[in-house]
Length: 146
Image 1 (cartoon, helix red, strand yellow):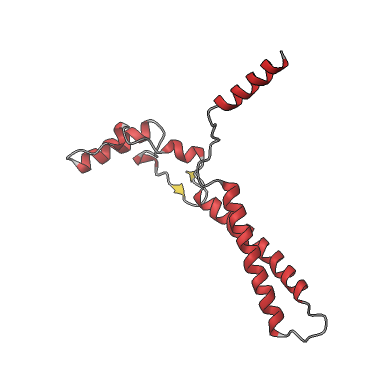
Image 2: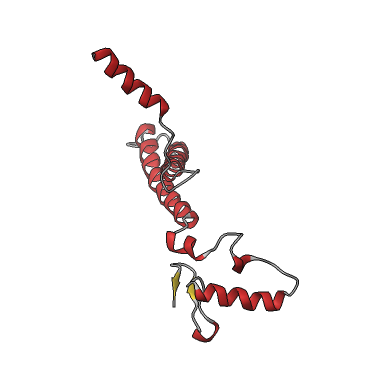
């Protein structure tokens, strides 16, 4: 009976379809790791270069300068990684504002001016864009609509 239970557990583990969270490639944690590790390496090189500027100075040790440079590099790399992730993020509210390519508001016909008017009317009707008379605008940094 124990062997059957183990076999069932193994088969269910092998049959599972890979699940995906909301994010796709590149993953946020991978971006954070790569930029932080790159910052550590660059910071260690800068720390070594600082040591080379005055290697004979009393209290100026290669290991301390390299560790200090690696720590500062990790901080700068993590901050830069957060900036990269923030700039590449697409919030769900913004993704919902963009209809798919087959949506009637996104179709292109031979009358571009009339089609743009229809597209704006359709988007305003589904809440995807502000109406023409409303005078609304989107704040680009925070993606807030007014």
